[in-house]
Every structure is written in structure tokens, then in C-alpha cells.
Image (cartoon, rainbow, N blue to C red; front, side, top):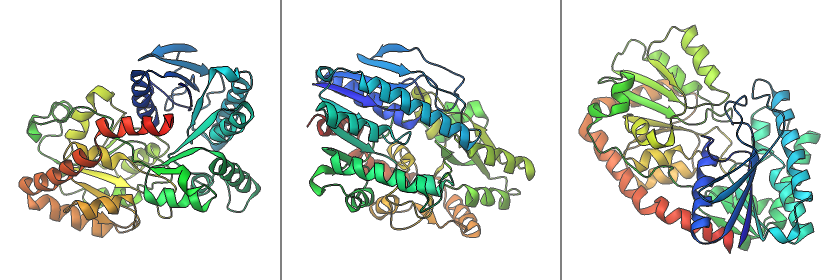
Length: 403
């Protein structure tokens, strides 16, 4: 089968979507399918970095589109990048021979990608599969990029609903998202729910103080509280930062932020404003090193913005669980994260704005000792190995796309 993937990001980009798509592309190729990707020439976090116009990885043919690369410094810059990418994508799809493609897999970033993919697919007789990782206009409204009930919001909603109605397959990441896309017009039988998988194949099994990433970064015997991944505007870090401020005099704790995104600036400015030495910021780590970086934490942080259940799906919780680490969730309930907490005892949760409660939880958990941390982490790992194993989820995702 000839499969065309439409996505802003793909290997070697470090964004989560890029890594999951690379895993899926490799699996589809291994099953004997022909896979082509249309992606951006600009790196997601560093648009000044460009990739070759065309290359192959694991047998997948990657064709990258030329468009503006202003970056995320201002909303108009992001809109310009999104707009020119979509125009370049539409041009490439219109001129693509109908005989070259059987199935199109569309992603959610940037907005319009899957609308254009679905539109052209109906014209050319291709099947269309939609991998719904984030939903618009809900996230654009929450991010302040558009106003609720404004014309742009209504246009985004119309286009999203069109994709939901016409896609032959929609893969939602959790039951809340699945319910939401049905409410927006998707046929119930077209919707499948499948979580994404942890993007690692190895787990750090050594003692915490022997972890090479911990040693290289000089974390010592600190209780490391880690937020690793995209610092998205829809997942506010304020409560976590306020906890770091309240714990500035308690030298047991170290707050480590790894990754990129628009809120990295918030972390940097907050730490500078309050002269906090208990905050460390690091860039995204290479995929082959991620089991060391994630394994260096004693407690991972998972954040979901209020009102975002069913609209987005923070998947960093899966990485924490897969490597056998406990986590603290800051966000609304119920959600896919609280579903996991119901199955795995001992993880922590507070609501946004409850910085004092978070401080109390962190102190209590830290004082419980290393054996308790391990007990909670072991429970998470057992669940992840049984329910979130990449060796199971990747082939299942490939099956959903092909069928």
C-alpha cells in the first residue's frame, strides 16, 4: 500500500510528533508498504536550522516543503509560517498524481494540514486517516491566538468538523478526545482510541546516583523534579514555578526543565526575576539519551491546562511510567492522566493555582524515602509494560492506518 504522511515535523526533528511518526513510518516500511512524508524544511524549535529538501530514512521517502521560517517569536510569525507551509502543501498535493497514493495520514499541526489533505483526498479518491493529537480551534482559543466565536475560530471549527465527517479513520489518543470528535461530527465507527507510545526502547536500571545524566549535570543527591518536553502555552507552568519559589530555601529540591516551546522563556524570566538557583533549564536531549535524562528524575511533572481535557493529550506521562518513575499531575479531573492514576497508586495530583498544596505534596513524597519512590515507580512501569509497550502500540497504529 502507498501511504502519504502530512506533517510539519518528521525525523530528525526532536518534537514528539516527529518521533512517533518516524516509529510509525519504520513499522509501515517493515510491513512492506511504501511511505512518503511531506514535511517542513525548518526544525520545529530552531527554524534557522533547515533539513535537506529530500532524503530517505529507514526506507521512508521524506520530501520537505520550502516556506517561511520566522519561528515562534510572535503570533504573526507563527501564522505566516503556518500559512506558507499550508500553501506549499496544497500545491504539492494538487499536483501529486492520483496513482501514487492509496492512504493519506494527516496530523493536527499546523492547522489546516488535515483539512487540505482530506479535501484533496476526496477529490483524488484517496482514503484519509486523521491522527488527532491536538484539536482546533479549542487550542488556538486557549493560546490566545483567536477569540472564541470570532470568524477565525468559526473557520477553524468548520474545517475541523469537515475532517471529522469525511475521514475514513480517526485515531484519538484517549476516550475523552474520542468522545469530543464524535460530538463534532465524526462517525462513531470511524473513531479508534489508541494512546501514543513512549519514544524509547531502553530503561535506566542503575541506582539513581549512578545515572550518567545526573552525574554529568551535577544534580548530586538532590530530589529532582523534572518537566521534560514541550513547554506549550496551553499547559501553564505557573503552579510549578510558584512551588519552586516557595522551596528556594529547601536545598533538598531541584527543579529541572528540559525541552523547548514558548513557555521556556517564562521559566527563564521567572528564575532570573527571583534569582532562583533551584531551577535548571536544558534543551531537548537526543533520543538515544532520553532514557538517561528521564531516568535522572525522582519525580516527573505532567501538566494539562484547565479546559483542555479531550482537546490535547500530554503524553510525557507515558515516558515517566515506562522508565519506572512516579509523577505529579497538575491539571483538571477527570482526564486520561487521572485514569492512569486510578490504575497506579501513589502518584500525586494538585489543581492549578494550588502551589501551597503542591509544596506540601512534594515535601511529603520526598520525606517518604527512596524505597517509596521506587514502589510507586515500579507500579507505573508494570502498568506501562502491559498497556503502553511500543512493540504493541506501533503495530496497532500501523494496522489502523492500513485498514
